[in-house]
Image (cartoon, rainbow, N blue to C red; front, side):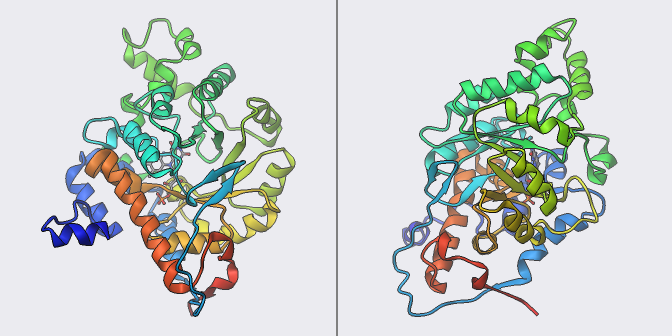
Length: 379
Ligand code: FNR
């Protein structure tokens, strides 16, 4: 209604209304190496494309005479009451996606405006304390890339706790960077440029490992970061991860039901079904196809989901397949590129408005009413 009202007074919408247009406009606005880092994936990008295509193989079944004039999209997660089932997936280069280099802060302000929680990545251009300061009353999650330096991991988690984050999400599928031809072709892996390492460069433990402070020798600091970045954890490390925090602990990157059961037995508070948007391993299954098995194995534990969500219809389908909350990845990066806080807010509000309208038309009043029965396989 806001957009149509604007149109009536001669004010055209500021941002694109489809993902395709959003990506095209972002491409024109962004530094080419940043765009290819965001848009690209692993290998021939089959997994990345399959993530999106998987949603098209499900069709929503409309129900009539439900009178779904009132909808309530709120969900409960880790004891929090969220106004909608959306959250922002962690995006490590969000900072440099925005024209002013402050995309993390833009997303944090968009979280404050919309009530959609942001997952702040370890790889950010602004320190986690500054990101959290932008959340307003909206809860936020901190995503940990676990370094080999355990004291540094502990320091990052404790800083996140002190900064007021509501949960810790540990990403398990990225202790090494996947084979990414677009980045390989230009010889540029964005984090290696040092601009999204604020959480490390300001950390007392990280600094104590350097011969000279990063301000004096930035190259040595980045090289040290590259050495300690990824820890190939095993199940034996799960008790240690669990012991790092009393906050809700989520593990990201689970697709196999056995891994979900093992994580649940290890005391995690939520599992996050994702294949990293197809950025890490090509030749994989669409994350959406793994979701039902993850939900079943989770046995009531919250299930977060991302990978391929591009529209409100996608959000509704992921909920119907059992996701507790649905993560938005690349669209937020493009929103930040096109309009900072306003751009991210536009992306989130558009997804929510479309999901809400779809539920109105199709007769579903709440996420709880969206069950697998709302879906049919498209032949
Ligand atoms: C990511 N993703 C990611 N995940 C994570 O746990 N920590 C991170 O720092 C990042 N960084 C990151 C950067 C960029 C540019 C992208 C596109 C993605 C993965 C992200 O959280 C999410 O899993 C995917 O974005 C989901 O796929 P789609 O829906 O964006 O295609």
